[in-house]
Image 1: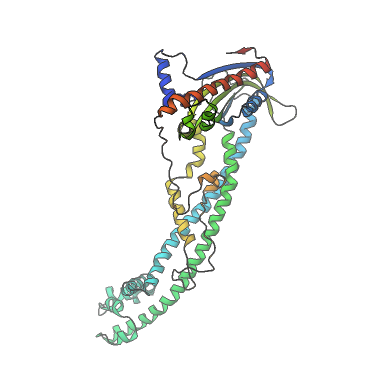
Image 2: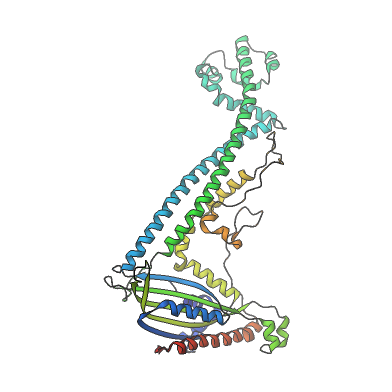
Length: 478
């Protein structure tokens, strides 16, 4: 079940959870610091003037407003339902097409990564030939040559003759032991075996030089292609995001047993919640005398006076002339609630909001940010950042292009537009979010700061309610 913002605050914030418990026991009359409600019912008036008047009024009071909830539900028989359904379908189709393109490119990237891994292992053997592990590398390459190249000779291959023909049992061991032509001449073998080993050693030594050059070329080409595919993935991801976000915004809520939503009626329910925050400056309040003077240099958590304004609108959508949009007249219920919250409590509210059903739609879009995607990003970064020199020995080159450490999946979720979400340099993975823990209040916070914030925000909340009520002559209010 979806919780409202006030229910979240009163369940996860210790101060308000305690007040809720006392209210349940009948020890206090109200769980909120302050609550006011007004009702405006007019079939000719629309919701927009009410909403924007209150929003502008909050800004005039110095409250930094933020929208937390924006939901709507239309009755299936209304023209508004059909209109938005068509728009949502178009956005979904476009987003689905681009996601299909992303999936195709992603499969190509996976195949490239697997190929590059194999090339990397093969090239390591050639690098080991120039190191202390030369003997082991040479034996590995000989085995590879017998399994991949010489085996194509069929019955005349080394393995086929050694395992299937009499007199050639020593052929495999002799080939693995031989290093060059002179070493073969010194072997105590019959002439038939020697002649075969000599020809195969010459072929093998030639294959080593040619195969290394070709493999390094192929490796470089595939790395370039991987970079091209990653860039394509970024472009497709940025193109897909607006359609996915629009499709999400056009999703309607479930009416369920809501009595106002009759299937055959032309009705819509709108739910909006905004929160305005104003930070308390402890030093200024101490100088002005509202707090003890010793508080000027006191270090505390930041406290905010928060005004929560919730709109619930039941309207009749009507097309505005020949325009492609609708206007809504009907009944608007607006509630004002006041809270005094510190920065940790606000973070906890955001955490609960994201994990609740209110943030569920966004989770569907961000479902691709899983551990497998992060592991894939590590592989991409590894190959794109790899340094090479002209000889392919792993040394850095002056002509190398700048490193590309960007995540190709970030664009799909708007990560490039949010500087806070960027991963610090040197981190291979974005660190997961830690659960917010609300620490106990100090004596100064509990006794002086929170009561002062609560007093100010209660007055501000009533002023917002009273000014709008008097300015519009509301007939029904509480």
